[in-house]
Length: 256
Image (cartoon, rainbow, N blue to C red; front, top):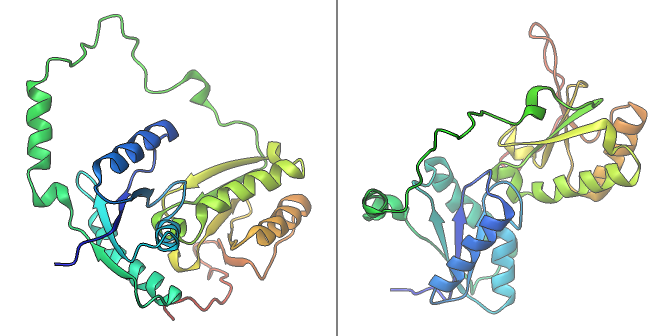
């Protein structure tokens, strides 16, 4: 049986904060008998392709990709083999072997042990009568002032294509040109169409843009946000009334 000389643990967690991510990453490295990396399949941070590149550059040639979730998303589990094949085809490294592990939470008694331990534990905290009821912070009653609502897709498919870098590049460029105060930048789990990522939706303009690099981000900020004009060559979709056809810029995706 082929044994890996490195492992990448993939998690799917949109709202994991940086401190908890560091803790989990440290636990993964401590538990693994071989060099290990932990990556998020959406949100922020290095994506799966980055981790693969890093391990190969370090000399590893048999890499296990292990999904980790309670349970792990079926759609992501079905998506991962194709992503790994795509990475392998692009890199053309014949001496690199990729392995993918099963959903451990389904294939063993992980959940049973977690629940049993929780019920048997004596460190659960009582919700005191003095606890103030709350569903959110007082400042969340109204949105902040803004002119442009920019929604950056950080779902797994856009994440693999560089969406975390898009979010960072967008924020830095808006700040650089002094337009950060006019924009409310938010992230989204999925916008569609995934094959055209990394994607950004700009409202109230109702325009969706494919921004592949910092040059495209700078053009978007200067032209769309700064001047109020579209950038046709970056535009992939324009929202139309329900009784009118949508305006979509032709695009040859990787699956076409």
